[in-house]
Amino acid sequence: MNYGRMVLAGLAGTVAYFVCGGVISGQLFAKEYKPYECVYRSREAIMTYFPMGIAATLIAIVILAAIYAKGYEGGSGALEGLRFGALIGAFIVFAVVADEFVTLNIGARLAAFMAMGRFIGWLVTGLVIGLVYKPASASPR
View 1 (tube, rainbow, N blue to C red):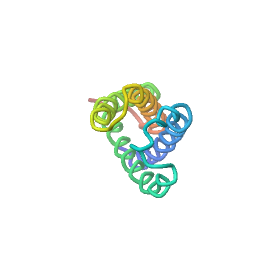
View 2: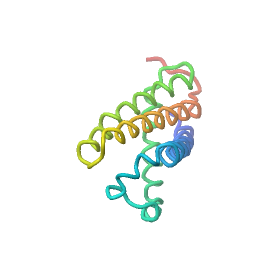
View 3: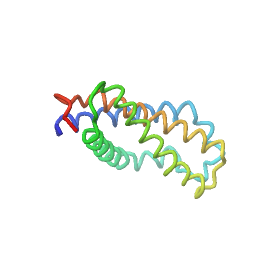
View 4: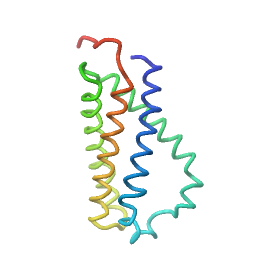
């Protein structure tokens, strides 16, 4: 495992994650959150916590890059990254979005948009991790 490439993949993955999140949740699906303003912090309040959120997400995605590196099976970084992103995305949809739907007072429509957005976001994040983390050679299993 190459730690330099792992950290670089984590940094690039974090940028991809926030760009996707900004476009998907912040722009495309923003109106879906409007009826639930009492459930979520205001944009202004979110900005107070944003530095902590960026730091925590960076750490989490560097950890995901390490998991990707350990599970790399050889072949195209793009395809391996998409496969990895799809697995992480599916995990997030079923472990996080489903739990938020159960515990938060939100509707099924918002939960479906959240599931789509998060799956796509993690798919892109996995793709970026796969493209950036390029092992010198495939290790035999």
